[in-house]
Length: 477
Image 1 (spheres, rainbow, N blue to C red):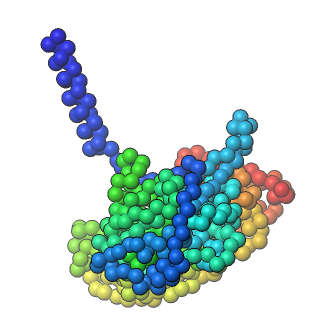
Image 2 (image 1 turned 180 degrees about the vertical axis):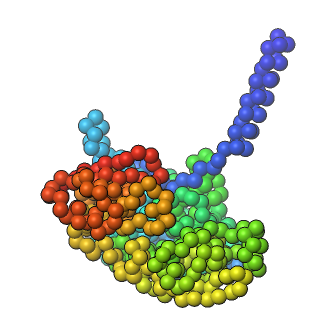
């Protein structure tokens, strides 16, 4: 009996020790907040006076916040979004899969901002307003690089929020998160800004922009696409992700800042896609050792490792070894800060850049270009032939050509409902052959696609995945 008791105690202590060790070494999950349960409706009725009062920032004192007015103003503008997808598999019986999230009305005539991952897999997008009215939404555009999307419903005279100025947001400032966690309609939670400019490596792709506002406001599945507002009801972020060990809220919530979101949404509204400007550099963060070797006054800024030949930075005479510390008067301390600032501009915009070179401060003006090394808006989007097929292509950058085994043409984006989307191809696919014709650049790829009679077979690869991938489609269907 004594031996049995000793064995039981030893087993119990061992189990506790194993749990402790697991908790110490386990990496927290970084997840896009998403829900897959049917929504339940809860009715709210708030006075129009409250909406107007807070919309113009007259309600509360941020030093001694009273969130009542802000909550009453914001709640009617936050909607529930349900995206349904019908299965094509025979044995599924045609059943629908569904995901739900939140959105924010940003205009009286029905434009709504949300997260791309909330609606991306849906064939049908349903929006339920705070007053229980239901609408089917049209997708205006999506942006994978920021995980934002713009949808629209046919409605008028709606309560709405305009974007506030996220640059004025301070660490420690009170904020509210408004959304539909666990499908509990119009839930309001409060917290503070924990940090700004956070990169949590959750988005995929070469041109992703992660410069999140981190808060400890409770955000859970279903909050995706909802509003992050300050104590006077200004929209200063779109709730997007959490870091968690359990899959639920643990105090680490992340939102796309409003100054970046407003630019992305304006592009989607005006062009149907984001007009992405790039600097044309390969960068790395500054650490103490690098700061000393470059004779920097502080461990801040972004180090240029490589400059793309003929790109924006190259034409402005920036060189490898330069350290960018300021853009248009905005201090640049980290890589996310640089990415966010550049992400606010369009191709053709001119910016002023301050940088250190060999320990001395310098300044230059740079005209930004797009991924195709052009200042034109939507150069490939306007190509009717590529638009009809349903994707956007570009030449490989010099740094990409050095990394990959074969030259080719990179797929930047794929349009919803297009021939290309039906192949289940993903962005970042590199095309090397069209109907067995070798293609090394955009011009050759377009010519080969145009010469194809009907059936098209694309051969290529993904940089981060082994093996070759093949996609086929018909030009006529």
